[in-house]
Image (cartoon, rainbow, N blue to C red; front, top):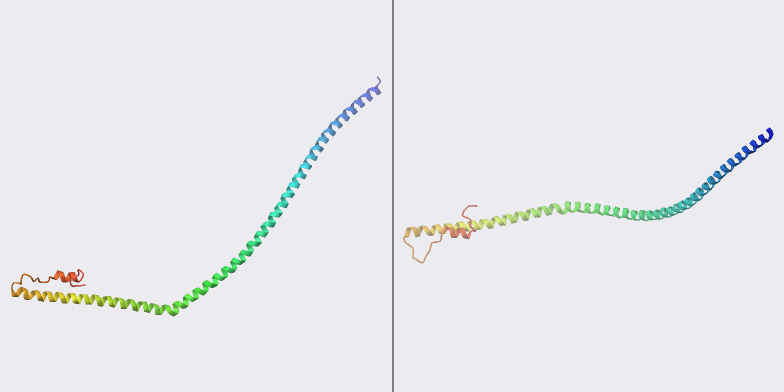
Length: 176
């Protein structure tokens, strides 16, 4: 074997190793591309699923917007009702002030007058009872004086005592 043949043999061996290395690289590259294609498919599915969720979220947002528009309408009605209630409250307050100004003073005077009349009537009734009790006590006292001076009393007659007069006056004796 000549030097050129050895050199050709080495060159063909190196070329064969290079081809084998290229095949190995291409095989690995094919697996990478297959994996990339699978990831792209998964991403596509995920995008489709995400798109469906976004559409569903869009529908949900539309429903929320519709609900909010209904809530806003109800809030407008509540605002109108609140304004009416505030107006009514102001009117009632004014009416109460007017009533207190026009009828409050005379009603207080009538109440004070009736209170005074009741007190005077109670005092008069008490005064009448006290004067009757005093008169009865004086009469009993006067009745006892001649009985004590004149001698013994007949057996059937009793002298009224002060305690029965006090009992008639409700248990009070003399003073207030």
